[in-house]
Structures are given as structure tokens and as C-alpha cells.
Amino acid sequence: MGKAWFVTGTDTEVGKTAISCALLKAAAAQGLRTAAVKPVAAGCDAQGHNDDALQLMECMTESMDYAQVNPVALRAAIAPHIAAEQEGRRMQAARIAGLCRGVMLGGADFTLIEGAGGWRVPINPRETLADVAVHLQLGVILVVGMRLGCINHALLSAEAIRRDGLTLVGWVANQPGERMTCHDENLDTLRNLLPAPMLGEVPRITPFSATAAAESLDIRGL
Image (tube, rainbow, N blue to C red; front, side, top):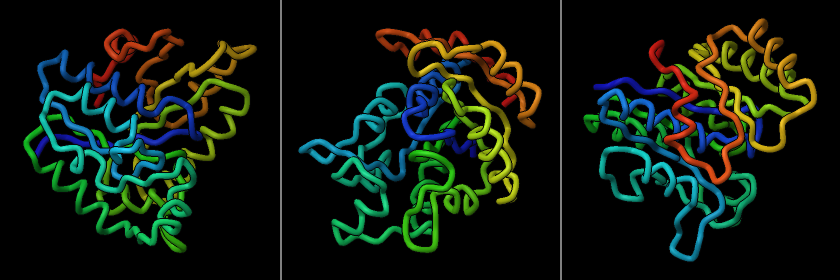
């Protein structure tokens, strides 16, 4: 079995999927076979497809059915546990982890499991998506959205990951919008305080290109 990681973010809309796509491209550039799973996605089109999952499919090297990439596709673009309740569905961390594990055993050298929102997104009254990562015992890659509040969000996320018994293996500074005030100073603070290496700083790219973003990443440490 190849290596796999869980990708989370400091918040929603910080660029988890963009960075996951860039990581997939960076790995493919090294000759690795790549795969990805978006186990839970809220916000789907009329065909039941989520844009984040479709982007991952475009950037991975392995050919997979949509249902393998996004086994839990929820219609409403709201908190997953609420969307699931509205649809009369029940999510369980162990079952979701099992679906992810099936992809991890599929032969790819480099597999990403992309979460939804931040680290503590509920999937039912007792479990969060973090429990999926715990079941899988994966190293965690944190996408830090470089905007006001990112230091607090990043440090709290890192503390929670460590408290759950997992290792933060690296983090990526992503600029999802306009460059924040004192960007460099905030980046230096994150470098000093986060207990993991920075895998890269990805600037705002319009229109976004995963291949271009991959040029800002260094995944050799993974």
C-alpha cells in the first residue's frame, strides 16, 4: 500500500481542494500514481456531483468511479450532519473510514483523504470528521488560509490534531483571496509556532491552476 494523508483546513473556504489538487500534481510530477477521496461533500449538482470531488478526479492519475471518490454526496451546501439529517441519512466514522481504506488499498503511491470544513466538523451527534482520520491513523496536512484570524485557527487546529493522537506532518500557506495585511509577518509567526514543516506558500492564482500551484510546494518530506 502506498502512502496516504488526511487534508484538513483551518476553516471552510480556505482552499483545501485547491491545495489537494496541487499536492496531487506535485506527486504526479515525481512519477507517483495518485488518488484522492472526498468522503463527505455537502453541496451537489442535479447529478449528485460535488465540484470539489470533480476537481480531485481531474487532478489524480488513477481512474476511479465518482462514488469511490465521493461516497457521501449531500445535496445542500450546509454543515454535513445537518444536510444528512435533512436527507434521512446517517453517517458513521468507521464506515466512512472503511470506504477510504478501500481506495487506499487500490494501488496508488500517493493518496489524499480530503476533509470538509475544518478539523471538528460533525458527522453525527457524537462523531466528527476527525474521527475518520483517527480510524485511518493518517498523518495530517493542514491548509492554512492566509487571512485575518489564521494564526489562532491554525494553532487550535494543530493542538486538536495532536490531542487526537495524530501527527501534523506539514502545512501549506494558501492565499484564497486578497493578500492580507502584514502577510509576511503572519507567515513568520506561523512558521515559528506550528509544530510541523511548511510544505509551501501558494499565492492567489487566477484562474486557478493546480499545476502552477504545485510549483510552490515541496513534498519531498512526505
